[in-house]
Image (cartoon, rainbow, N blue to C red; front, side, top):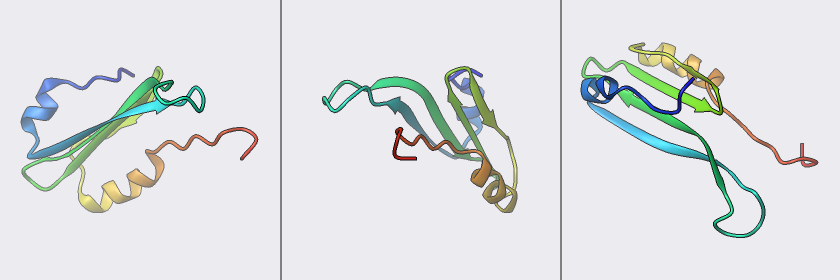
Length: 86
């Protein structure tokens, strides 16, 4: 999955946001590396869409109700825990 989104998705959206997903390389500020992107938005009908891509993997859904989006959002997330802290 690509870490870019079609322009059409932004054009159709009433609101949207983008976050860059980074992996820290160490404790030195500025040593992070971009590994993906997290997009989400709301359509004029009130339905939502997100897309998250990290590396070549990702997940997305489009034009779903807020209730369904709340369920999907619990699945469609990433959590990186540094070893050995897991």
